[in-house]
Amino acid sequence: MRRGRRLSFAACLVLAVAAAPRGALAQTADELYASAVKARQAQHFDEAADLLKRALALKPDDADALVQLGFAELGRNDLPAARDAFFKALSLAPNYRDATFGMAEVEYRSGNLDVALPLAETVAKADPVNTDAAVLVENIRKAKQTVVSKPKAAAAVLAAVKKPHRRPDPVPGLMEDGRRLRTEGKLPEAEKVYRRALKLSPKNTDVLVALGLVVGSSQRFDEADPLFDRALAIKPGLLDARLGKVRLAIWQGDTLRAQALIDGVLATAPDNVEALDLEGRIALLEADYTRAGRSFQRALALEPRNAEALVGIGDVRRADGDDEAARQAYHQALALQPGSADVEQRLAIPPPRNWRLDLGSEVSDLTNGLGDWTDSSARLAYRLSPRTTISGRTRLATRFGHTDVQLEGRIDQAFTPTFSAYALAAVTPDADFLARYSIGAGASWQVVAPAKAFGPLSLNIDARYDSFADTSVTSIQPWAQAYILDGRLGLSARWVHAEDDTGTVADGYVLRADLAATERFNLFAGYADAPEIDDGALVPTRTVFGGISFEVSDPLTLRASIAHEERPTFDRNIFGLGLTARF
Image 1 (tube, rainbow, N blue to C red):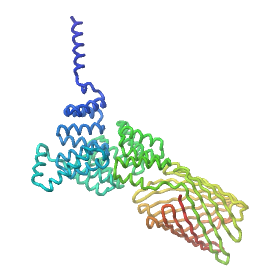
Image 2: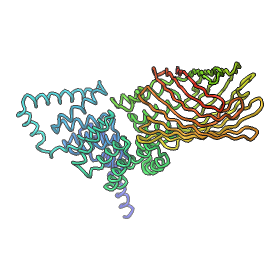
Image 3: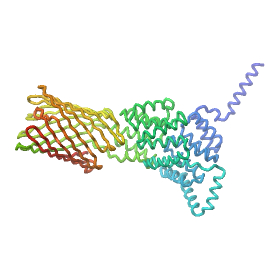
Image 4: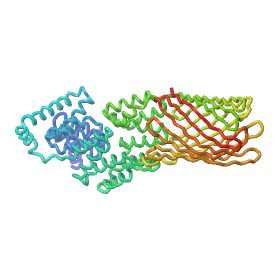
């Protein structure tokens, strides 16, 4: 008897499983999503919406599921629910054209024609073969013409459309306007729009995050951070706000803090596309191009229409010296995000010129009837990679009837975006007054990143050993350089310490200011009270100097300088001309 009951129960269980709808058996978000798409295509909108909500409960950041939910809600004519789904999808993937199209459809049906038209036009322009978008644009334009020609009749039609629903919320439309303005690089206008939205909805975390990003993009970091904190106070753990704080740390150049924050995000959301993009951006700042490329490629695999990942891949390729491949990635990103000021700025950068030629010549007029000195040089440099440059220099100098020719080789290496170093060696065959041979090295460390009011600030050091016929001299010159006035004014201070092999020591300093008067015209001036190495002797000198440079074109710069130098035995006036050509 018991055995018969067990067999009956098993049979009932098998029949129940066989009769259960497919959606009931789906356990993963992907299975639920696939079933929902089939249900929506069959116009079973209630079933589709239920399956998609269950899928989103398992995977809340699935932009595809949110878009499908939006269309399912449109099928049920629940415009507020559809608007909310499309808005969330755009928050996760701002360039998702299907979500933009869905939002345009919602606004059209709600009677918000002025909001609907630019959304639909954006989709139609980005995808000319999209007939649905073209039809929607035409319908919206016809509806706007009806409003103009028959305002009363149109008002009645729109009222009839909107009657079953609540009054449209203006915030989503403002959010879309703000997003568009931000994409176009119009940050002040976008900020005004977001602040209007925040006034209407003070506890809207999406508005707080969007406003924080715009304010942060304007480098007002102290104002931006509290906006993200307000959003987190309303919704603790809010992913968008946490990612916003990561962006702030990146913009401030604080890679350690940014990495710590992004590690926390990826620990709970390992497949979040925006987090992966930001991880790649941090790796780029640290010059870890392999890790950066890996993060961007993973983000692109998860979301093939991710413009930010494509921009990141372009940046990695450009950093590796492959400008052509970088431009291909930028063009792909621009196709997904038409009008993006960020991408257009990258494309506007001319291809790198790997060769550089520097020519210069100085004539010195000596007092006390001592005649003239001349000093001319030619340097040719080649950029092996974005981080490595090699160069060779020839110097021809004449003094008191003697002529020396010096040959120099140098290599410059940038180890990170903030630390670089160089090494050089020079030789003068049959030297009369220049060093027979010289070796030198130096390094530069950027300790403060560029900012609007102050920065960058770098600490530098140069060291050199010169061997003359009768003596040798070692010199060490630590110096600092800082920029202010939005980077237009540079100030540097250099300490000069020199010592020969007999123990004679001389110290001094050099002060200099560089001013970018216009985009192409630069000035510099300075004062030095420092020893000069002259035929192995440490000669105390005081010098006032200045000069100009003018960028005739992108590859050509002209220079001129003048200086007055006072020595114990004579003075000299120095006049110099030079040019730099890049090709």
